[in-house]
Image (cartoon, rainbow over all chains, first blue to last red):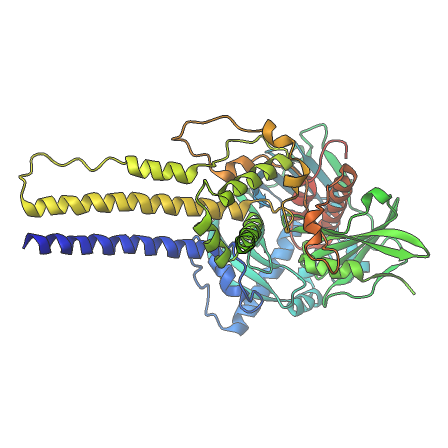
Length: 350
Length: 233
C-alpha cells in the first residue's frame, strides 16, 4: 500500500516536472520567433510580427473586414501625416537598435510655417541636433514624395501599391491610447513597419522597423509626451556642441550624371544634391527612404560589402566611368540585399 | 575528420547565434554541445568578449562557467526543512519527499529556463558581427589577455546584455563574399579603417537628414542622424 502511494506520488511529481519543462520550452519557442529566421519569411509576415508583440494581443478596433480596415488605415495615415508636420509637441523617447537602448529628448514646433525640431541624446555621448526649416519645400519638385506624402491622394495611392496597411489593434504607449498600424511590404525591397498612432492626435508614439525575417530592427518609442505649445526657449540647443542643420533648400537642387538602371517598384527620386566629392540621390516610396552616394574617394575606402547599424544599411561598391573609379554607397532603411542590387544598378546617364 | 566537420558546424552555428540568426536546429546543436567548459562554450565566451572589445566597451566579467555554477547551485540547494511537528506518518513522509523533489526540479527548470532566455536575449541584442567569422578574433588577439576580467563572486551573474549598454556608433561591417570562393571572406576579415568608418558614419548622417525631409517618419530620422554623430564630424 505504501509503495503504491509513493509511486503514484512520483508519477504526479514527474508529470508536474514535465509540465514545467513544457511550459519552459514553449515560452522559449515563442521568444525565439523574434530571433530565428523563419524558413519562408515572405509568406506570412503578419503572423510573425504579431508574435513580436509579446506584451498583449492587440484587440480588434473594428470588424477586420479588409475594406473597412483599409479605409480606416488610410484615414489614420492621413492623421499621421498631419500630426508629424503640424503638431507641436515635446517628449522623452527611447531609441533602440542593434541592441542599444538610448534615451532622447525631442521637441517639435512650427515657427513661421517652418518646422523646427530639436533632438538631444540623454544617454551616451552628448549629441544634439537642431533642424530648421523642414517645409513643404519638396512638394513642388518631388511630386507626392515628401514629408507630407501621406496627405495627398496621389501619395496615398502610391503607398498602397508598395504596402498593405492593416489596423492591428490598440495599445497604450506613454500613458496614451494608441492604434497600431502595420505596413506590410508587398515585395522584398522594403522593410515592414509597425506604428502606434496616438488616438487623439495621430502622432506616432512608437514606430518599429521590421526586417524580412520578422526581426525588430529599430524601435522608437515615447515614454512621455507633452502636447503643450512649445516655448521658444525649448528650441534652443542646450549644449554648445549642438549641430544645426538648415533644410530649407529645395529638394531637387542639382543635376546629376548618375542614373539608376533599376529601381524597386514604388520608389522615386525625391532629391539630388551635390557634395564636394560627388553626388547624392535620394529615393523614397513615401515611407522608406534610401540615398545613393557616388563619390570620388581615395583608395583607402576600397571596401565592398555592407555596414549595418540597426535598421540602416550601407552597401559599398565601385562603379567605373571614363576610366575613373567611383565609390558607390547605398544607404537606407532597406534590406541589405536590395541595397546591394541598387549599388550595382548605378550607371552614368545616357 | 568527422569530428572536424562537427566542430566546423558548431562554429558556424555559433557565429549565427552571435548574429542573432541561428535557426532552431543550430540552437539545439549548440545547447547540446554547450556545456560551459566545452570548446564551443569557451569560444562563445571569447566571441562575446571580442565583440565587446571591438566596440570599445569596458568589458565586464564574461561568464565562462555559468553552467557549472548553476549545476553547483542546484546541487547545493538545501532540501526543504521538514516540519518537525508532523508525525512520521508514511503518507506525510511521501508527501514531503515529492515536495522536495518537485522543488528541486523546479529550481533546475527555472534556472535552465533563465539560462536559455539569457542566451536568447544575448543573441537577440548582440550587435551583429561579420557573418562568416568574427573578425575581432583574428583582428585583435593581442588585446584579449589585457582585458581578462577579474574574478567575481560566484553568486553574481552579470547578464551579457548589460555589457552592451555603452554604445559605440560604428556600424558593423560585412564584406561581400569574394565571388566563387564563398568562405574566403571569412579568412580575411576586413579591418575597418578609421577612414572607412568615418565615411560610413558621414553617409549615414547625410542620408538620415535627407530622410527627415522626405519620409513620413516624424523625427525618427533625426534620432538616427544624431546617433552616429561623434566629435570632430
